[in-house]
Length: 521
Image 1 (cartoon, rainbow, N blue to C red):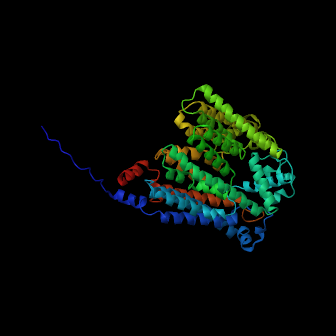
Image 2 (spheres, rainbow, N blue to C red):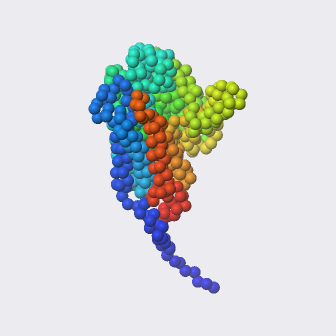
Image 3 (spheres, rainbow, N blue to C red):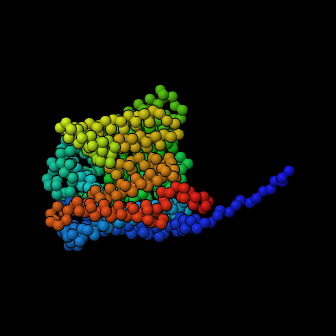
């Protein structure tokens, strides 16, 4: 009979491959944070040349700004700076995760250091990636004039075009709720005709939303036993988050912050206290942007409690709905606009984009039908887009009715994702509506994380290429040339990240990444 013997655990074998890998996944993140900050600074400097400015802005007449914005070498340099800077931030965001594979207690300070260092330059940048903040200012002037913005577009006030608003808003009602209309009016009243001051006010408001997200998303993660620091990195350190919620200053930041805060309180205290607080906060989110309505039924489910019967669920849905309607009616009475925001929901109708499934399908089928039968392609395209929206809403309702109680917030994230994914128009910042909920309930290392990396990379590239401000009065340079330079630069940098860079090219190789992780632990 063979005797039994115990042996000590075998030390991991240090191969040449693992030694090379460990050089990339260990060590201080200081260098990573510094290079990410350089990327953010490059974006900031580039924004002075191709960021958005209103025609009425005195900054247009500042000598050095005019020299950049109205000559070809300055514009080309600015485009390259924005493109390279954005890609550098994306790279260093990936590198930060490699430097902190365990996400231990010491990682929190590094993650916050990265967020602060990378975000600070964007506070001073000219608007990039969108000019929605100029529309906010113009809509505030409509409110200031005593007009109903749900009935009068921004063209109803003098010189609206000089203040930078997109012409699409000339006769269109804003798809925003009463609270954000008050914010717009307040900003317009404070700054008067100073559109630049107004833009930075709106950016400050967006930062408040970002702080809500940064505070509550890790708390949501802790409720799910998910590492809060890793969640903070996934959401708030993400360059797409910084670009869209700080640089572009979208009001979606405040809406999302209120949604996350409401979801946390409703999930943390599943009683009248949490339910009422969550309902009020999400109602305020709806009063910023009505899309937040999708979250309200899940607040009702959280309030109903675990193992609630269907009659109990329906009763709490009714309670949440009553509170919501009462609050919205009160706000509508205060500003005299009633429920005008309901009619404004159709403002974004008819918009489509090629990479959205229903949008791309609508474009293809619409053009095909037009070429074969002569039917109006817009009719076909809009019809397919409407079907896509209905499918997204149907799936969101199905998710509301089906699933485990412990997955309620994850289900809420998927419901929001369905509404986004099946819409014919998917803007890059739409992803940020639901990412906090999915990250807080767990994005696994492996294929889920790889998909998240690639999605972030795609939308960073598209945002950089799509929204550049180039004067239409230049004879030798136009917006298409700027987009070509930005596209070539970002795609070349992305190819370098994925296939050449000795650190980041390993990000999408899950087996090797896992082997190094095993070696470290």
